[in-house]
Length: 205
Image (cartoon, rainbow, N blue to C red; front, side, top):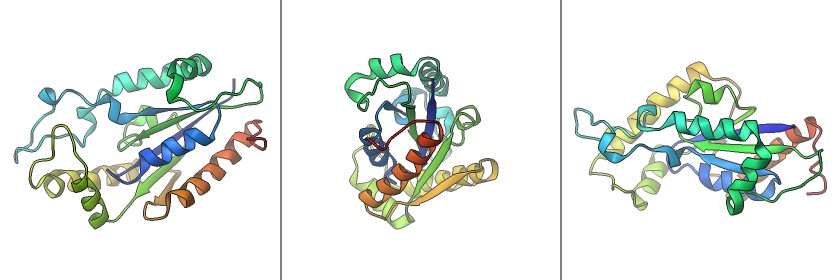
């Protein structure tokens, strides 16, 4: 069975979820495992010396559970896709078609066991000012306390990014200020090349 794992990482509010969903809609036999679905309960997330909840770190996530989902897909992508139902892209039955898993999240490349499974890696980035503006316009549960972005979110992003760049190779960095259509076209074309290299045929899609 032919498979491809595509990682779409990046900073908070960088556009990674939008890109991932758009990719899934265009690529048959594809589905998404999103890291945001694996946050631990707020009651067990540690607090730093400034009183900020430490959400922007791997310890705030049930990474074992996320890995179990990814491994379930790797074991039987066809069954996994069927269970995903309406959350998955369209399906094709030809043996030439490749099953694609899109792994999306802000720390997917910082978790070595997960990163090592990926065939393609994309990282969405936007400037500090844009990121802060987008973050402030969203409603989180629990909501961000005053000073949270500058006191925790941005410093942790810089720290996590440095760790990622020190340990991970083969990342394609994407300019999140480009239009959604331009970003999707570029990534879709690149993924299609990899699908065709595996013997899949996207020409008819």
